[in-house]
Image (cartoon, rainbow, N blue to C red; front, side, top):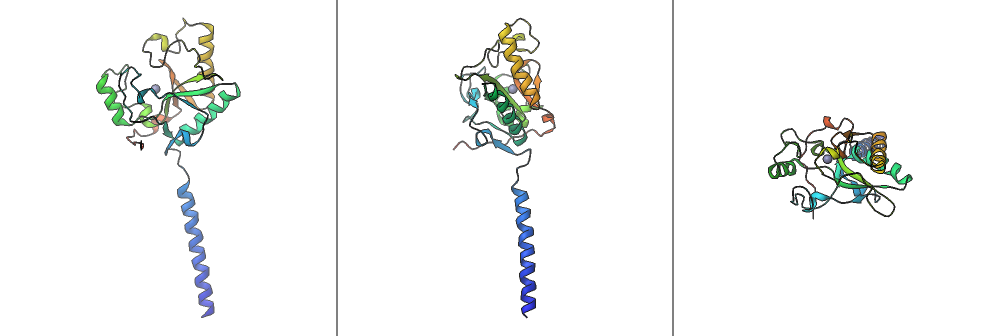
Length: 211
Ligand SMILES: [Zn+2]
């Protein structure tokens, strides 16, 4: 009797241990999970243009300003910001993950695929792997990149030559460090960076809570 009770306790312990290990694995964050950047760092500056009317759409398309990204995008962005901070700069964020419904809303306002990705194809923003960013200095002043964010013209392209030396150097600083941290440029927009291989992630319509 005593022996069977001992065996019961032993088996119960083994099962409990196995179960707790399984839940531990379940609690680990997958690379593709959507997370809020502000939960991982206080060192970013936010200027979420699409949560205001101060953007080329002249429309507030987000109910609230939050920077959600896939976990692996956040990890790479933290690495980039650490590198910038060592040089006295910080990343300022204009846009992050964008739910597919918001992409549809934007395309309905400006139905021109040169400016807004067609929601049928989607953008890397809809996959949680793209960020629109610039750099600010220690005083919080944005570096001169030659054009504003969402300036649609040849001046915004990486290969645009007619810039001052300072503007070229600022773009190069942004590009070099983002590339070292796992991001890829988007040729026609100096502010847009895609995490490498992010096009493999699914388009998403995950929506964050604004309450
Ligand atoms: Zn973008």
